[in-house]
Length: 495
Length: 93
Image (cartoon, rainbow over all chains, first blue to last red):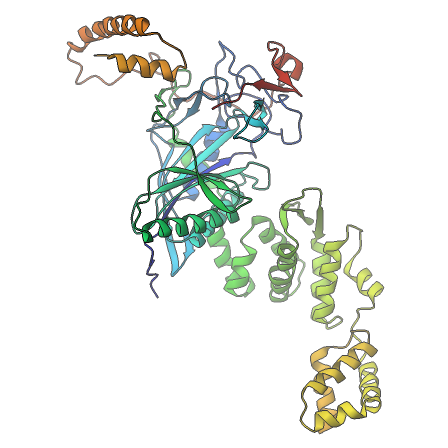
């Protein structure tokens, strides 16, 4: 099957990610750990842009950029350097942003995603290093702003901006690209996507190979998909009415799910880029062999290995490797000698499914327990131990609990922060699988007590069988296995 | 040659109000500065790589080690325009 792309959609992305796993900012020794700090407590003369100060580049930021470049299968520049991008806005107090211009550190990479018609390569035009601006808070709405409050804690945070080719053909592909990209960055351990402002995306999109429109500053993967869906529909409507899509920048209103035209500037942007005289150029290609040594196994390689090593399905392998923390958790569960296929089902299908249902995002894994936080309310958090998953998988594998009971255990553990093992919960809730004679007894009683239903069933009313099964479940407090019970009743009645 | 429009554009980029009279004056001054560079243009430089740094130094880095930041009150000491630990500036538009 080849994807026809009926609307001629072309989508390109520009993604800013913070290298928030580094300890210090891009050009000064201020800590990057500012997320719960009071405003302007993580600043110094350099990131405040005071006169006479000089930036000095964080070596780890360059290493991280090379790591990202290699993981994106890009070329690392022989010589690379910084430029000043001049603009008037108080988010950077110097009056310019230090960024890279015509000599980016990374160019010509690619990321293979699961596209509309199978594997699809998205080209990476370039990836470059730059500094993050400070954070502005408008008093009142942006339109009726009475003034602006500035916190420079974020100013000078190390960023990597990645620019893709317009290779994505649907909002779904754009979202899959972002998921994969984030996953790769987390594997590289340069980025924590759960922190506020860690990733910001600009998307450009055109239909029927026409004029492209840029949508600025979208903060979530879901937001990107929705903004693009809306924008494609809008452009198609403009064309259907005989109009022309004009080249412009639009803003995505997350609450209303629409893109809005931003006020066009009277004069064109003029950033007057010039080489940053305070920073020396870099020649760092000789670092590449050593950095290659430190590259971890990346998602695609891990997925293939999981299929091979644990004998699990590609679906499970894909799901388990979609987060490095989940992959590590699964491998540690397997290392305890449990059946890897059963562990894959309970981890990838049930555990992950229940997390998604609750809007919980995996945030860390320390080798003993995997932690997660609520996507919208970071106060809601919990964790799940390797030892608990091992116990649960073993109880299920040994036939001591039904699959319904195992799901119940996982749900209970996610909904309480009390320290309880699966056995505790099973005992408390009486979830152990009923002994066979208990089930046999319950079936005999049910048949004796429900003459009418039995006759209906024998007369051809299938629904009555469900009623009888339900009665047995009631008598055994849900500990009987529904499928077995059903078979036993049929055997009893029809011989 | 720098035109009056160029001077107006530069003034806008720097957010400086320039009067009609100043525009003419700056245009003349800027053109005379550019005139000096015109003299340099006469030299044969086709085979000379541009010099961006006089010192041929590469790879100046810092280790990723945290240094102490300034206390908030010191950061805000030189401004009267502050609110809840932030700098307060007029609306931007």
